[in-house]
Amino acid sequence: MTVERTENPRAQIGVTGLAVMGSNIARNFARHGHTVALHNRSVAKTDALLEAHGDDGDFVRTETIEEFVAALQKPRRVLIMVKAGAATDAVIEELANAMEPGDIIIDGGNALYTDTIRREAALRERGLHFVGAGISGGEEGALNGPSIMPGGPTESYEALGPLLESISAHVDGTPCCTHIGPDGSGHFVKMVHNGIEYADMQLIGEAYNLLRDALGYDATTIADVFSEWNTGTLESYLIEITADVLRQTDATTGKPLVDVIVDAAEQKGTGRWTVKSALDLGVPVTGIAEAVFARALSGSRTQRAAARGLASGALGDKPADATQFTEDIRRALYASKIVAYAQGFDQIAAGSAEYGWNVDRAALATIWRGGCIIRAQFLNRIKEAYDADPQLPSLILAPYFREAIEAGIDSWRRVVATATMLGIPVPAFASSLSYYDGLRAERLPAALTQGQRDFFGAHTYERIDADGKFHTLWSGDRSEIRA
Ligand code: 6PG
Image 1 (cartoon, rainbow, N blue to C red):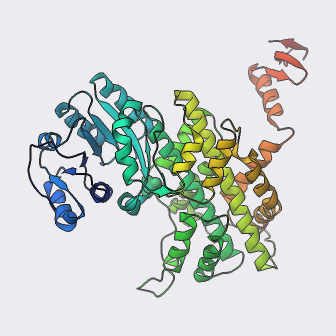
Image 2 (cartoon, rainbow, N blue to C red; image 1 turned 45 degrees about the horizontal axis):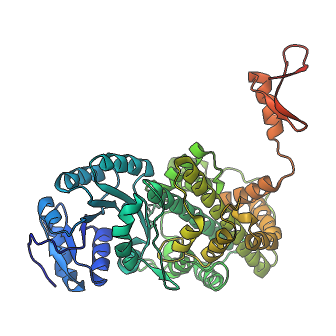
Image 3 (cartoon, helix red, strand yellow; image 1 turned 135 degrees about the horizontal axis):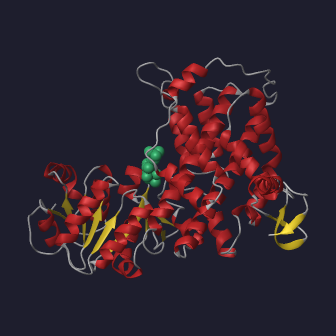
């Protein structure tokens, strides 16, 4: 451990904001042989880190921002790990005042991508590089290898990429870190990553709910089902930890922990941002939206208390063959998961087109194979699909995914129908299936919607047999005119 106050610029990277994520990333850099300058608003956190983990590598202890900046080699690289929002702006301002043109500020928090776009432009004016970097993997990932999604100027990646790649997770020798694109693209894709995370978690929750309420399985039995699923196409971090959570026994009551946790899911906002952005971009991310709303519904405690006991209507029979139904749920989960990822990748394509980011979806799937919360075997398949066709209109059209869905479609319908007949809510399973049916439909009721819009607002419509826009004179003789 080297603990010193120094004006010698010997640190390759600085980390400011030493809560758990910041501390772990700083330790990760140090463990990879980089000298890390440490800074925190209250120096007690810096000292606590050095006290507990100073042996991880070479750290430079600093107290003031000026001292912190002076400890860094040029171009200076500072990673900010503070709460998204006003706190980030305050730290950026302090840093920018102490830094010089060519220096790089990296925001590793879950910032809103539009904030990142704004900050990047403002700092560019001052000659500084600003890199909004999505970092996924939670506390454990931050320490042992996260997935890193840096945006910002291409030049800054030259000075930053090797450092970030060295601490990221690696899959088959490939780092889970790549330059995503300019300005806010890194935080945008991290936001969508989190949206997909919400959908994935909701789908897993629905599968658990069905195993519990349709089949009457207890938590340990369900844990075994998830462990089994984790050996196949569903293999993923979230399925793996689901089994762990379900196996945990509560020390106080001796019951499964999951049975004593209040069933109201919270959220910090990235899922909601994803849906808001999808609404603006006009991308139907129905799985993600249902997941966000399902959390909101779970947290509507007053309404839920008042509605408990409302009539269910006549319910159907529970599945006769538990083994068959478990397999149906597995297939429905996989198909719905494919839809959620397809929608998320569509949103990334739309965001990329809107902002001119040129995001490479195959490269993104590559860096999501390890380190991040949604890491999963099937990200390899997504990578292959976009490698084979970078312009793929939808993931569900790639041969592998098409076959997977076609193999599971009967199961998927049985699960949604059975859940409906048993009064078990499956918003994400059901909306994903409806999305699939909507996308493959020969004809949608949108024709009627257009007729209605033309009726009450003269909004016009297109015809299937002629170019141009048309309007029917609804309040006149109901003849059609060209608009
Ligand atoms: C990650 C996680 C991380 C965080 C989520 C939790 O990729 O490491 O997504 O960013 O745990 O923001 O989000 P909610 O609190 O909204 O569930």
